[in-house]
Image 1 (cartoon, one colour):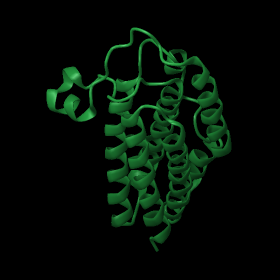
Image 2 (cartoon, rainbow, N blue to C red; image 1 turned 180 degrees about the horizontal axis):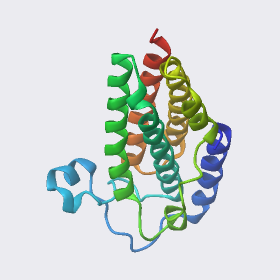
Image 3 (cartoon, rainbow, N blue to C red; image 1 turned 90 degrees about the vertical axis):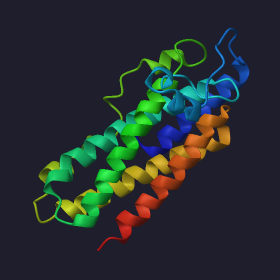
Length: 195
């Protein structure tokens, strides 16, 4: 999904949920730190702070689809990479996003605003052209193509996260968005700065 479309969806959902207000009867969410400390049983608890709004749910769903595509991109190229630094960066990106995926999936509500978005299929997120470019890249070009594809992909994640910080209601989700913005922006710099 193009970056402009993602941002438009976030803003539209923000306007819709601003009118809807919080849902009644939603359980009090737990913090990610408390969830991690409590172990796997608590890992699925939603984040603490303000009630999770529809815009927060839309962001989590969109970011889940985006991160799933990131992992797919990295896995498609990782065994063919020649540059050790790029291989290490790709492994770190995969590990980070796998952890974030686990947390975000656990945070999605089962009732309340935006719950219908929580169940939609993420298979269509992203541009298959990027995957096709990686598949078609020669062994000599795969490092360069991964840098280009992943830099564009991670820049889109940073843009989406930055938009969420401005419109999200739940502070824990906004904190995740801030961290995603920072990490993806740093990854883009590393990907573009690698020879």
